[in-house]
Length: 435
Ligand code: AMP
Ligand code: GLY
Picture (cartoon, rainbow, N blue to C red):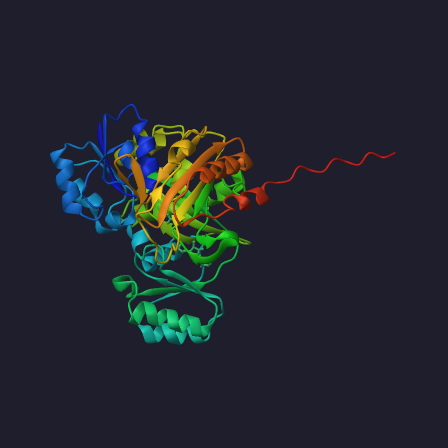
């Protein structure tokens, strides 16, 4: 088979690495890819948002399967365009991708199907939104309706902050069209986790749990980022918790989407808060998480291409997933200044020696290759990932690898996985021996 991956981040690098292992795959392309991806796939100069360009390439090169990494082309309808031309593509249609493309749609869907989520109101008129927040309880969460590259959610501690946020989103339009409407919702407390499932529109399989680290600084301080690291599995997700998430969130979502005439095929990613009332949905994404994919896919023993074909062909019920029991930890190394302004073009050293460490993979996000050298080209630069017997070992191995890599002003969190260590149940203490 000839396979085309769309995207250019760390998620697409791990997808390329995993897809390449499939005996079904003879040739792998990535549009546009990055420096690291160019080592496993042929990178093609077509951007992830250029749907006509992607279609032209797929037809000309007789691509048998296209895999979409990021949300923007999904929400813009890349799957519909490819399907109309009779091409196989893994991911949801434009109508199904609304689960991520519109937070107003997602919240109304959750309410309609009785799926646990924070109490909310939606607004398309700025004066009504501003009236509502006067008597609201704080902190309060304000969300731009549309895609905002992970920056559209603001937790407001006071009325003043909420007023400013609504002005920025609805009046100054800092997120452009994405800010035509807002969701205002109650602030939930608890541990966050990511549960992903792969569906064919009717059936689904759950992937193992993972946990992201959204804030830039240790101890979850500072502004939100795309994700500074992840681990899988998350020890807080016991079998009982998985069952609850499956029956209260994933199953009703797949069923509801089917009944609404927008069957969901592809990766359904539920961002959840573990509250005292059980798991509640914070958001849906309609693709693999980044960096969750870097922590999950190295543990998946199945052929990912077979799984994707089963999703497209409506036979996910035939698949049983098998997992490597080891833990996987991914530490993101970013450019100094990220998630604000950052510099690019810095030479990266130490990649080869880090890559030689056992069960360690350096997935590239924002890099470009020039000759034999790699340079930074984005905010998140690398996802340094290790498998280990237990989370403690995986953390140590990932950080040993991180220590070997450097570039000017490089930054990374030092506490990836620390939360998992805290939530591992302690061994009961030895009974005291009476003397
Ligand atoms: P989202 O893009 O909806 O995932 O939101 C980004 C981040 O904002 C989430 O990962 C949470 O950390 C936070 N968040 C979103 N909604 C809520 C909420 N209702 N209560 C508390 N935190 C939230
Ligand atoms: N890691 C969060 C996301 O992929 O949206």
